[in-house]
Length: 252
Image 1: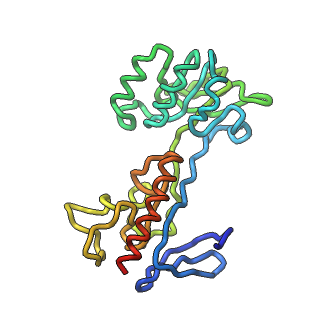
Image 2 (image 1 turned 45 degrees about the horizontal axis):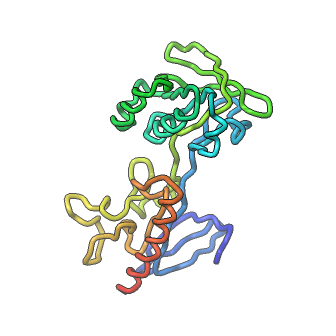
Image 3 (image 1 turned 120 degrees about the horizontal axis):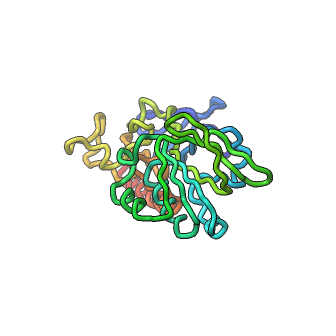
């Protein structure tokens, strides 16, 4: 077991899959599982870092639901995860305001969720709006919002939940594994184009569900394209990847 090693490259060397480290070392294996996760984007607002965990939360932070009872809650983001969070907190909070940077929700959120938010009397959607600053004492107390007209509005709140995406940081796999436009690694059926296997695929079978475009390299969790960005799902994919590794090794 190697710990505290930064991986800088992955190389196919014949049947071996070679992982290179930042210290110049490397290790070769018959199979590799990538479970590197993602780096969630932080809120680019003055003071946000100081209040992380003290009023500013990344993700739903469901444990905060009771503390939100009869409070005004703000959610940042325009995708499904932000919408689902707004729906959840609407059951506890006095008012939930969804802050969306874009001009509408239609391009980034499912229609059913948009309708669900519209039907909730204590949910307000503010488009073209960003958070520019957060302030408080021991805990978050207020935030500054800038709307489409450029005016700054200060809102009182003790709970701000942020859903502004993640970065997989997979540049070190460039030219080795197929990735989508956002850098998430493609696996299994996503590699097939019009039923054709990916270029350079030499095996007489399609890639396994969690297998990348390089046979023997499997991907599990948030770094995988189209994965469900949840802990339970990532754990399940990790277990599945181990099973697929054994199946791959039996083929050798």
